Length: 235
Image 1 (cartoon, rainbow, N blue to C red):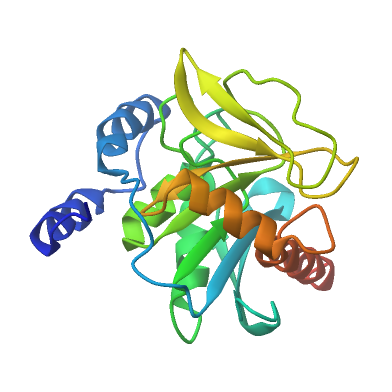
Image 2 (image 1 turned 90 degrees about the vertical axis):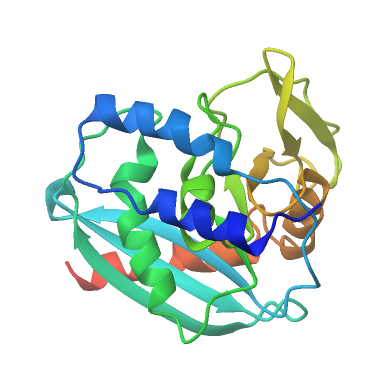
């Protein structure tokens, strides 16, 4: 059952934390904020789908983030934004969101409108503390979000069938944390998990819907291409 507006307001209040923290504080914060992630059906069919991706610049001192807005039927790009932010948080495995989320959030806010559903190039619940980048961004914005990662961060799974649509459940300590999904026949699968306010079945279905021709779903593929271009243009 969807949570109440007042409950959502409390989640948004708790999410407004400082980004100027230590890795130890970040780990504790992930454990605390993971309780805010919700698995619930989408309220309606999305009218727009967003995608995000990042690249580091200035020798790792800066980060570029791109957000794109797509039509869910044609998968045409309707709008895009590019932002650059200083990168002050160190590289620590499992704490990617504290490096990338501030820039990703700024890029999403720079779009002409928020997407109804967001696909993030990174983990959602498929994270050791169940709070990957897709969860962090989704909860911060109270936005339905899906984590679509190219590689596994944690958990175990069988090899999914080789045909498009083949899938295998990703588990960690007996807990289901995502699905390993083959988006094209014979290519490496993707690791799909809940970010926020979407069910795992919906996350898989929308990932396959948006990955019609390529391994990556179009929202994150378009964001990846555009952030690479923006990085080249900056030299």
